[in-house]
Length: 336
Ligand code: ASP
Image (cartoon, rainbow, N blue to C red; front, side, top):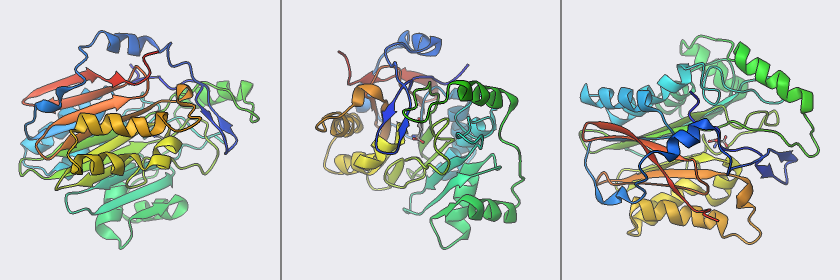
């Protein structure tokens, strides 16, 4: 089962890319999600340790939770959790089996950020499944925060990561099908993309986060989204809380979304209020075409309270807290 399939026909002007969107008519997965209990304002309930992730990724949150229970740090937890999705070839938006760019190359973006404010990222990484672990190595073993493309791959190989062909038969077939109708001006297609973003508070009360994605399917070669950009796709402040994003990365970058959510929490907002205001910054822009794209945020604060919100119906968060691993349907802005 796919985690989701909710951005269809999102239009992205200015870079010559348009991807289609019929958000109201989500797939079977979102129908299943609609049946879930909608608990959008659960911020009042806080406890640690805690793991939250974008979308329906209970195996990943379980892995992260177990990592903490076994004495691991929040950083260990989010890395291990993200690796579960990266290794899952049936997920076509993360790691191995991710949908390729227009040229048929699967390119990955990922980052990590820990309780000290240290961070590492890789962008446009090819042929390495566990981009999140390469990002962690960038943080821990280099003087830099971000490595791109060939340099990122060379670094990964030097650290013992094995090269692999990330384009599975299923993703290759989907790309070839897309090429039949590919129209570059404008391009109208059906997208399937999302990010696994994960945040954790460990038994010491320390916060870390990670995210990993293959980005927009059939993106322009060289395109990088929000996910590896610290402050946009992910931000952690161990004094306050953390946030991670999914959805149309260009829109998240334009509002520096995850940093914004954390700063709003610093000003006293609950995680839920902060996520809602950050979505508001996108949809309330003059001439916003928010009806054509999705963005979702999840956040937690130092007390272990959580929030999650999206522009459109269909987004969900997986939360492991108090021994319960559950998928929660998100509230959303566009009720019209
Ligand atoms: N945010 C990711 C990107 O724009 C994709 C997604 O989460 O749907 O690359």
